[in-house]
Image (cartoon, rainbow, N blue to C red; front, top):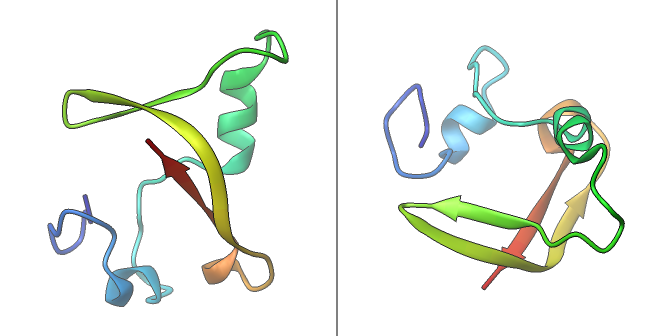
Length: 75
């Protein structure tokens, strides 16, 4: 949920506004959570009381801080 405006996802206006604080997990945070798991561990995403498997990724963007992101594809 977009904290500043309440939309179900992080909206483009808030995401692209450098003064907006969006509460998301960073790569560093995720890697810390994954420490200690075996390399063949499955990763699930919990959304709206349902669990999804990560199937892949797309839209990997590196560069300026506001576009330094990746989209995970879940099923």
